[in-house]
Length: 65
Image (cartoon, rainbow, N blue to C red; front, side, top):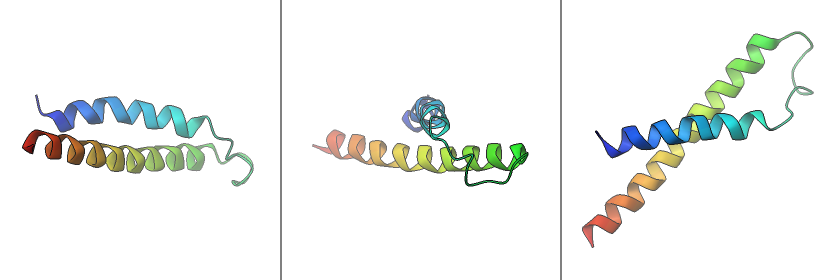
């Protein structure tokens, strides 16, 4: 199993947990549940992608030493 796949499996739920703890409901219009969920999901995926790349770069650098 690839290390990146393992990191994605760790960081996607973690980033969803972090993003949903914020209160962004005041930014969106009332009764726009689908837009809020889509926003949370897209921001969580972007955050997970960035975190995986950071940790994979650190892992690659350490393994080269």
